[in-house]
Length: 402
Picture 1: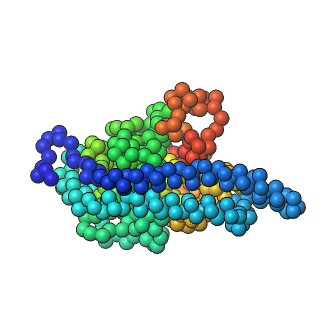
Picture 2 (picture 1 turned 135 degrees about the horizontal axis):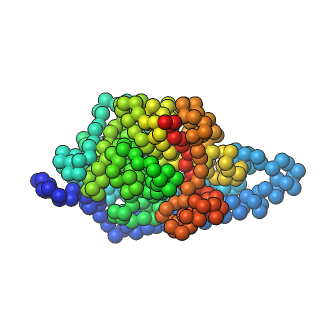
Picture 3 (picture 1 turned 90 degrees about the horizontal axis):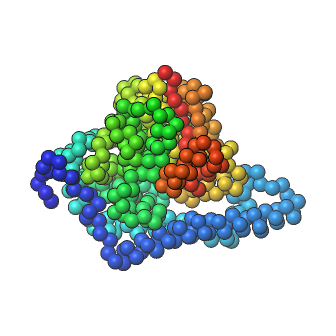
């Protein structure tokens, strides 16, 4: 372990000590393939099974066709293939995190030492502010969200960051990606950042905030498009923030991480020009989401923008799509998922104080899977609207009136 960092020297990588064995890597590869099979092949087969066998049976019986996702769930609950699909997908989700636990726990002490060294020296100037007295909300602690053991927040030793590493590596296994892809800086942040530069070419945020930032990877993507902006990320999880800070410093990304509950933040009114989040609001109760959006409104400077990547609302989807998306509410320990999607997002923003005419919701292209030529065709309207999860990201937000 180096005793110090000289001027201009890159911070050590907290990921460098993570080395799965041959058998661990093979297991992770199998789990990645199983996740892809259940989430794509079996999912498509389930849709085909419903439309070619279950729905025609309903029609032959003279019953009314299902009008909502919940109606379809009641129909599908006893269907053997749906039960098999759910069991496979559930177990694949658990295996995703289990496949990285041993290699993370084996080097957790080394990771913690590297993280402490970086936090003490701050080679790029980023900061890490933790609050040991912060009361973690029950909606975080009551369940292992996403079936991740320990959820987002669990700490096992002093200065622990292993939960952040476990979630990061497990998610990469789930996406079939390599653990050491340093270029993996957050597809969502990169995509939204690029879209903002095209949608609002004169917009130049001085400060931006990522709410529910976890390890901050999407903030890194925003910084590629707004390199002069002062970047802040808040989360209730200390291990996630420790891991994110260590990664940011190694990558040369200046981020100020702070352990706070987004329902009530310490920043002054009008402090930010851009406030973002990624897959965050469906993880909290709707009443809490209202408080957080009110905080976004308070913290935005006049002319500032808030934009959040989320799942599309029920009203924007077909009954089958709603049944498909809402599987996670029942089986992936995301109990607020369905209720959040039942909201009108512009109504939520208006209730938070934003003017209705400034609210927006749309699906933007995923920059990692869309060529520049196709992106331009999408912006000009020459390409049809995209679907969330199939080449695009659903986003909603508003601009604070000047």
